[in-house]
Image (cartoon, rainbow, N blue to C red; front, side, top):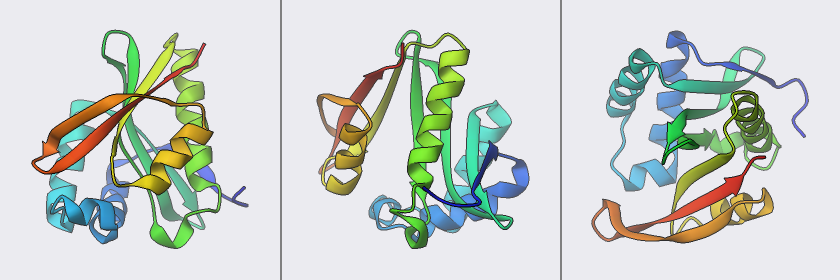
Length: 156
């Protein structure tokens, strides 16, 4: 696991660092995400009250997760989840996911769902290792020609 990594609630001042992670990541580049578009979307989610956590080390953001507690009925939903490419395979993603699950359980949420781009096999393996199961494929859900896989996990 990552040494000296702190998990805390996201703050408005974290948005530029999160946007930078998104804009430099191959996944979001596929969807045409830029620093500016990510900052705009993240600011809107923050102002709407969406929950978020960041993983920080020495003051820098290494990863993030944006989620809510009530999508698909009473299921939690991970909207955005990412780790700086320089910090993958260091346990940061696992720590963020565990923190979200713990917070949702404390709020009485019994299920967690998320979408994962079908060609992102590394992320799909990660979610399966963390106890998620594949519900089905959503063709052209976010972008024409790109399929999303819906994953779910029971938290209780």
